[in-house]
Length: 74
Image 1 (cartoon, one colour):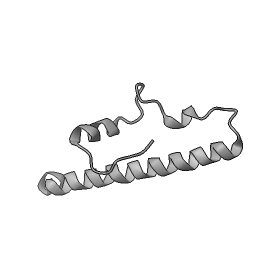
Image 2 (cartoon, one colour):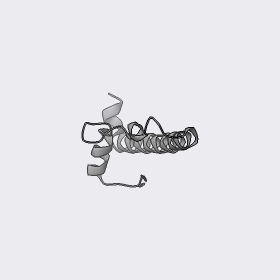
Image 3 (cartoon, helix red, strand yellow):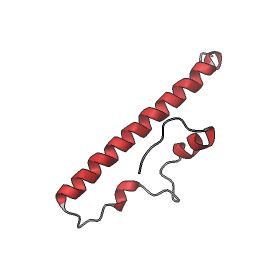
Image 4 (spheres, helix red, strand yellow):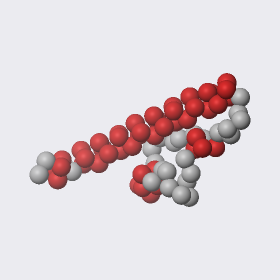
């Protein structure tokens, strides 16, 4: 699973609903009997992807707010 930087507005809307029934929570895909090292590696990878997604969404929201500063300050 990889994340792309710079996406269309439709992709932005999709990312806002990242954990929906049609997009299951990715860490639930880790089998319960996975070896500890493999599970830890998957958790580290998923944490990094979640952090990247969060930072990208925060940046997108900041860009939107900067386009309309007057509407935010009311």
